[in-house]
Image 1 (cartoon, helix red, strand yellow):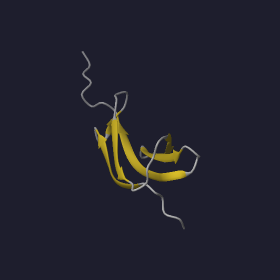
Image 2: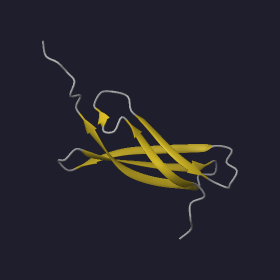
Image 3: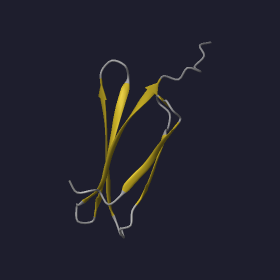
Image 4: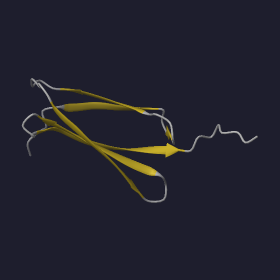
Length: 86
């Protein structure tokens, strides 16, 4: 199996868990020893089961459509618990 040129070293989700209806930030750290002049990032999110766990899959491709890296990780989305009813 050929190794991907980009090595992902970490994923930080803020806030964690993600709050439904609010913006979230996914910081993905990585490194490579290859010169990259452009390309595209393809992100898909899927949901399975009844426990509210989502899976984010991210693929980075170079200008020629070759795969630089592909990662997937699970995250949760919670309803905002600070909503007050008046």
